[in-house]
Length: 357
Image (cartoon, rainbow, N blue to C red; front, top):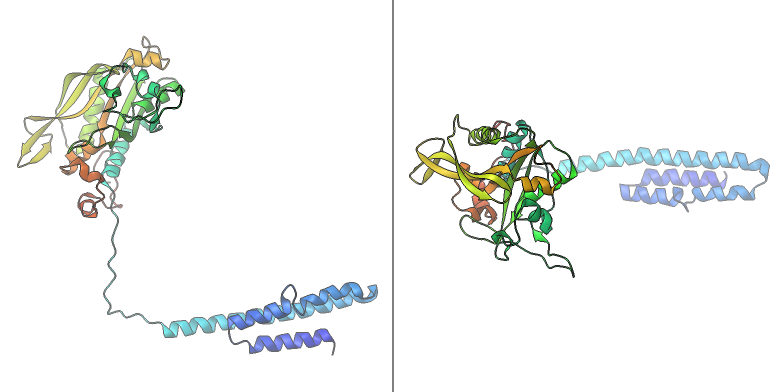
C-alpha cells in the first residue's frame, strides 16, 4: 500500500472516531488544511518524472475528495446529535409569568408633524427642508427684517461665534429661511411647507429655546387673501377633526408679509378645557399674510407678476390644543410617564384628512 493510501485510510479512521465537531475540525485541518498531510502531497508532483505526474495528481485528488465527503457526512451526523442533545436538555416552564415589555410610543410632536404634512400634502403642498444654522441674509435680510428689529437682538436669537471679517451665523429663528432658499433655487409657482426645529432665547410655560414650526408658502399669479383663508380653513377643520371652525383674521405686523394677520379660531372654555369649533370665545392659533413685495424682490421674483401668501404654525401649540397638554416644557422633559399618557401607538397613523386612518 502506498503512503498516500495509508494517509487516506488514517484520515477516514480519524473521521469515524471524531466524537464532536471540534475534534472533526481538527482532523480536517490535519489532513486537508494548507499544510495538511494529504494536501501537502501535491507539492511532490513537481519532483516526479513527467509521465508519472498526471497519475499521481489524480490519486491525490481522489484521496482528498474521499476524505472531504467523509468529513461532510460525519459533520451532518454530529450536528444532528448536538441539536437533539440541546433540545433534550432545554425545556420551557410554561407556568412562569411573562416578562414585562415596554412598548414604545410616538411623541406628540412627531404625531402632529405627520398629521400636518399629511393634510397639507393632500392640498397640494410639497415638503422642503433647509439648514438649522443660517446666515444673516436668509434668516433676516431677505425676509425684510431691518437691522434694528428686536428679533435680531442677542436676547432673542442664538448667535454663533463669528470668523474674522464675517457676520456671525445664527440658529434659525423660523423656517422662513427655507422659503428663501427654495425661491432662490427655482422659479415660481411655489407651493410647499417647511417643517422643522427653530431656536429662540426664551423659556417659560409656553416657550422653550428649541421648538418646532411648520410654515407654508404659495406663490403664483393671481393669488389673494381669499385663497389664504380657504387654505387655512380647510387645514384647521381637518386637523382638529371638526365639521366647522370659525376663523377671525386680526390685522397684525410681520416684516415679511403685507398685509399681515393673526388668525383666531372659535372655541369654548369650560372647566379648564378648550373645545375647538364651539362656543363664543376666540383663541389665537397662527400668523399669516400676503408675501411682502420686498421679499419677492430679494429672491429675484417680480412682485408685479407674482404674489402669494405665507403662514406659520407652532407644532407644540397645535399639540397642546388638540391633545390637552398644559405645559410646553413637558414635551422636552423626557419623562416616560408623560409620554405613556400623551404618546401614540405606532399602528395609529394620521390620514390625509386628519384623525386616524
